[in-house]
Image 1 (cartoon, rainbow, N blue to C red):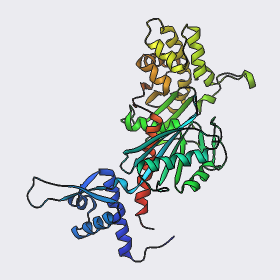
Image 2: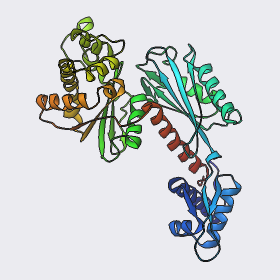
Image 3: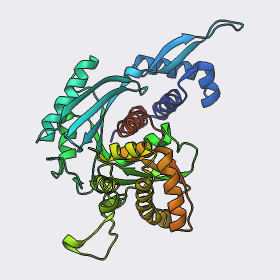
Image 4: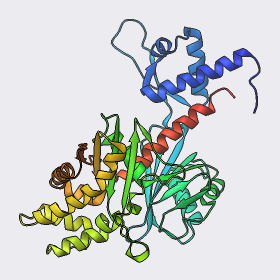
Length: 384
């Protein structure tokens, strides 16, 4: 590690790092704003901004007007100073990759979707190169790639577990992708990333902690404790589909997926005379029907059975019902789950439907990628 020669060089690097962090956090600031926030002198602030603009990390985006005296330049972090890509790996139906390239400001620059190939290495690198071309970026200029996985990533072992997409469970895959791309590659569970989106764009922004339960083809749980996600020793925290709900073993073993996983929801709908191609379609049909209350009541009772364990272990103030099934059920299902949970356990968390529009996994991956990219840019200007 190279040491900074002399205290003046050290202070200069600290000042630049702190100023860039403020621009990234606040959006736009004048030099007067920066002096007030940092406590730096007028000449030092001017020198810091000169160095940041010369390095392409800050830009002038306007001038103040309407007040006495000359107008002041308004600065912002340069959105083009860094780019990150969020990639969501989907296993439902036809496995595919959905990706978004964003700039340092978090704005979407390019978007693409490709089929998941047997070998993830060329599939992901090709997708990253394609997005870079669409954005007009030089190959290899993307600093960071955030993967959203329908499984759990164990960083110590370097392996993705509990994933059904071919090729993605190969040990060392994430490290190999980083080496091939020449970028930082981060990997996280898709439900964890949906929880990040819920805190930023959904119903969980005002609570200290919450649990997000994902109901779709499979099950998942994200645990947000004061804004920090609990991932577990090997990244497997939240894999509630594997929780046994009976004493059987082997083929006779029943777990939570057998109660409220996608196939189980379809079977339950069938017993109530509702035929549908997907579990979310079955739930949506029930919500719009005046005669499907018994199906929703039965489904809510099963969901409450699983939530009782979540409530007993975590005692969260809020539980968010998310995923395709949770979204399709809406308030009709949430109301029934609330009643069923109160009849199951004395613990009484609030139950809410996800409030994230669009694709919550990809939105969460974008937010995580942008946060990591900003930290990386700030670190690049920090003392070494």
